[in-house]
Image (cartoon, rainbow, N blue to C red; front, side, top):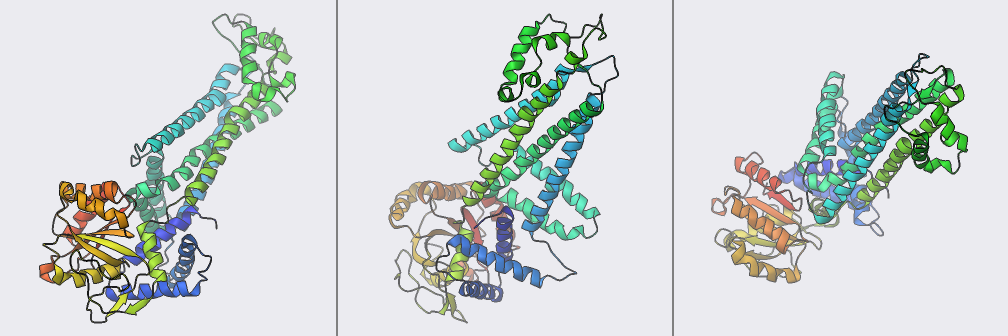
Length: 522
């Protein structure tokens, strides 16, 4: 199965659409739909990734079926792929035209002033070598920083270019195009996806935008090569060199021999580079002019210059493009589909909906693993999470035994996991550390921390969450589940709640995609 970047973008988007359907009726409909999708598949032999993309294909069909002509919306992944493709075309055309125009004008020859070989070499060959070298250096720095874990969340030059071109220039262009407004929401979503989940999606977005600069560079060099060959074909050109310094032609020939090594072994010597005599014969002295110089010496440089463009400007960029394509494929294959949002969907698809009534575990007590706890609700319909278990950490003074039924019910219904135990903690890492470390011996699938939404996310509390995730439960996702104060008997947190918005910003600033925020909803 081939994974494309647009598929991951669409998968994330459609999951976000489902997350916004947070009423009880909508939630029940979503669960039933996901289970129905699973029933229509052939699960044996399908791994989790195939299940996710099968779900994606179904959701795409439903998405387009539900969309009307008047309110048509483009999926973000499709829009991104289209915009990227046209950006590549635009850069290739712009690079080729700029290269051919610059080379054509640079090679203008009026009979008395030959083309300066040194300047041509610097502009069209040496400059490209330096840019390619700088690119390789930056890639090496990126590789080393990733190995030592430094700067993972620091915005790169590529991401700055991405934000400037895709999320500032293109939206303005789309607004001027008739019907372009239908893509604005998708562009804004992609921008938010990269900005808010930079650590999670940075690798798969890096290589496509890395290639954009290489596309422009290689097309520029192709244009320069084409312009040079065209000028040589239709014009009588003369190439020469001059220097105030006294330079022996033998030394210059030695330097050119080193430069011509990549092609001198298969290209005839008279084409690979100028000979000693031709180099000396193409030297221009101002007081003597060019009338005394032989034509065969003045035209001997163009094969060397053209081959230099091919081997030092075009081929290195071609190699970089091919390497970035392979790196992109590797990044997509290695994309972590074990993230909590994806695992939650898999659980929803594979878990039946049942009617269950059982008592919830008391604070700190281990419930029977064979029985799923559930709240006493009006409908008594409870989502039975297949094999997914969670350990709940909560303040014992806030979430007492009288509130556990409701809390466990919300966890079971919203996060699609069963609670194995509820452990009272003090939210002081130095005091809880021993207890938390002891819990790592038999860890469940996920860790959930109950938190009152009114309590502000102060620095000490955020530090506690970070230590939980990085020092104790490093290989498990950490959910922060926000509720209203249990004594108010209303646990639901409204999406527009000011305190909830404060928590969202605080958790986002932590920069860890495995620390997730969830609220209790109806």
